[in-house]
Length: 521
Image (cartoon, rainbow, N blue to C red):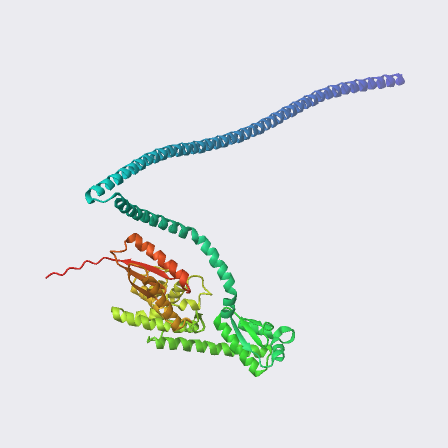
C-alpha cells in the first residue's frame, strides 16, 4: 500500500513535471516565434534602409553624371561658339580688306582716267600752242620782211639765229636736267669707286701711319734676345705696351705696329732703351715700359701746357691739357695737329679782334677745335662733336663748345665762333707747305686755274681762292646770261679736268651781277 501510494505520488510528480516541461517548451516556442518575427522585421527594415541608401546614391551618381555631361556639353558649345565668332571675325576682316582693296582699285582707276583726260587736254593745248607758234613765226617772218625790207635770205638768216638761240636755251635746260639726274644716280657708283680706291690705298696708308721702325745694331743676335726663350720676351713687351712687334718682316730692323700713336711712341722709346742696354727679360721690359710711360705722361702734359702758352691763353684744366698734348703725336696729311691747332688759335684771335668779339673765347675755340682727334678712337662720333663733349664736361662755355662742335657743320652754329673756326681751319690747312705741297706747285696751280677761266669769252676776272680749291669767275652780264653762265661753269670744269692734275676737288663758281650806279648832284 505504501508502495502504491509512493508510486501514485511518483506518477503525480512525473505528470506535474511533464506538464511543467510542456508549458516551458510552449513558452520557449512562442518566445522564439516572437523573436523570429522581430528579427525578420529588423532584417526587412535594414534591407529597406539599404535599398533606400542605394537608391539615393544611385540618384546622386546619376545627378553628378548628368551635371558633368551638361558641363561638357556647355564647354563644347562654348568652344564651338568661340570658333564660330573667330571665323566670323576673320571673314569680316577679310571682307573689310577686300572692300578696301577694291576701293583703292576703283580710286586708282578713277585717278588713271582723270590723268588720261588731263594728258589729253594738255596734248591738245600743246598741239594748239605749236600751231599758234608756227603761225606766229610765219607772221613774224612776213612782218619782218615788210617792215625791214629784208630779202628772203636775210629773213631766213635772222629766223635761223632766233631758232638757234631758242634751241641753245632748250638744250641748256635739257643738259642741266641730265646733269642733275646723273649726279643723283652717280652717288651709288661714286661710293663704289671710293670704296675700291680706299681698299687699294689703305694698305700703304695704314702702313705709313700705324708703324714705327727701329734699326737693330747686331741683326739676328739682338732679334733672338728680343724674342726670348719660347717668345716670352716679345709677349711680355706686347702685353706691356699694347702694340704688335714684327721681327722677321724687315732685315736688320723691328717694326712696331699699333693704331694708338702714343702707345706706339712709348713702345718705340722702350725698345730703343732695351736694345741699347742689352738686358732684355720680362722684368726689365716691364720696368722700362713703366718708366717710359711715366716720362711720356709728363711729356704730353708739357706739350699741352706749351700749346696753351703759345696760344696766349691762361692755364686750362688738367684733362684738357693732357688730351691736347696727345695731338702732338697725330698728323693730318703730314701736318702736325697740335701745331695746326695753335696756328688756328692765333688766326682766331686776329679775326676776333678785327670783328670786336671775345678774343680769349675765340682762341680757346681755335686751340681746342681738333681735340676730339686725340680720343675719337675710344669714343664713337665725329671728332668735332667728341671734342665738344669733352670740353663741355671740363667746364668750357657754351659759346666755345658750339664753336668746336660746329666747325665741320656737324651741328648748326649758334654764334660766329663756329664759322670763324671753320675759316681759320681751312686757312691753316690750305697754307702752302702746310700739307706737303711745295710753293711752286701751289702757285702754278693757281695761275693755271685763273688762266683757263680767263680764256673763255665774256669772262671779266677769275680768282683762285682757298689754296686753289675754289675758282670764282666774274662774267660780263651784257654778254653772258644765266643759262650761258651755267654752261660756262660746266665748260670751265671740263677744261680743268682735261688739262690739270690736282688733288681733291675744285669748285667753280660763276658770278654774274649787274650794278646800276647813279650820282645825285
